[in-house]
Length: 575
Image (cartoon, rainbow, N blue to C red; front, side, top):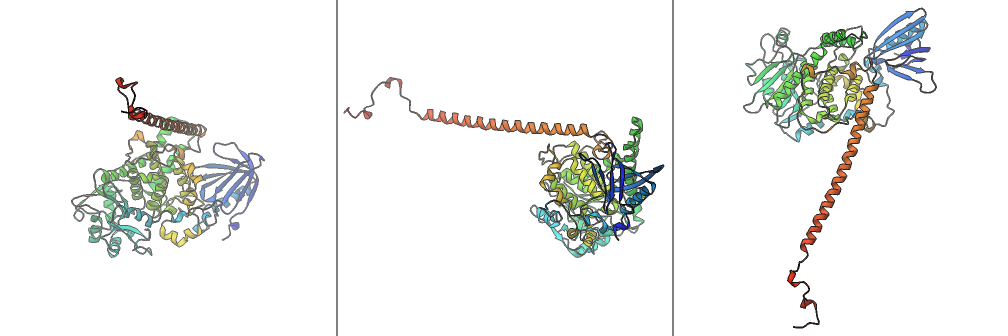
């Protein structure tokens, strides 16, 4: 298919752009295969907008006489208005934008056509391979191994080709366990706690069914993570009622009789359409211009967004507490093991592991616990909060995870190497990007699409020094301790940087951030002066001590010998 076939009117002159928080601008609108481009006529300081069609969530049309208005609602929550003279021109452009923003084929998306304008120093596709993670693990324990049982994706279509499993479990046992777990997602290592050797594993629900089916290989695999005399915890991200209902459909949960050393805890985390409706209500509340406090607070509460944040963080804190304070290993799963499970395992690691609070450590976490673990980004992020077509599989699961990370970052502002802008950048690229990192639903699909050969990795761009500078937290001081976030209602706040950034001026926030940077730089200058003065003081003290030592080593004559002659020093005197 040629993109030209979808573009009925490629250009419109005398169009007027109304963007968020900026005055209306007259200029020229152009449509390409992947971008909507608006360029103002001003010779100096002219504005230019490049909007990916993939970032467009919804297109609305309005007409007043011969003047047409197109309202474009974006996946990053922006709302843009275009006034276009001529009804036919407006209709043609609107239908073209709708067609270009809803392409069915992934291979027609922009990442397959994008060519970087920057020097590629690092191949982001090879930055965080499972083999590299295993090498780090092998330096502290020899109880685990890399399994290639899924090298052709035949055991589990949503797992990567290589996974980390207990050394005592062979590949044949893994194949049997895969038949006992939904979607073949057998338990694999998610995190190893160096402090006490406890681990966190993740999987999907067991297929026990109404007959109470069991799998001895599954029991052996899970028990292989326990220390002698120790118990473990299974954190099920479904309510007990939902887990019991799953048995009627062939699913279920681990039965105590077959897993006596494990205690099961249910921590309900919502999924799919409930989360999507929550996002829609939240964005609607944030766009409400009535300026009525009671109305705003009522809508915010009705969205239940912060309730979902609390539920996810509570489950993550529980998993971290079991590992660090109880000294117990943990298995996390829900139904599929691709959504709430990953939220819990990744947030627990941020709480426990200082490495995950660095930029590269967090990138590795996203790759390991979301991309390689099979979170279906293509399905979940197909639409955002404005789309008129509601699909069953759409849900802001990854956005909720990033929001939870922001809540922890806000409570521990000095413990993270990255800043809020880093998290916002990841949110934007998960929904629409020139990079291929978030395309596809799992490693199997990405392999078939040959993304590593045909597209550029997001990490190749992010990890360049000039970009990293934008995402570094100036307050960062490495903290090797476990951090325990508060989940009390008064501790959780609306993430204004995402949900209100297009609705209010950022001038004062920018000025405040600039002032913070000035204070930090001034503090560093003072610290450098203090260090220099301390060095000078140390040098002076050293000189004083040397002088004292010299004084102490000089012979002192007795008072009654002063003025007498040393016969040995006078050769003219003989005895």
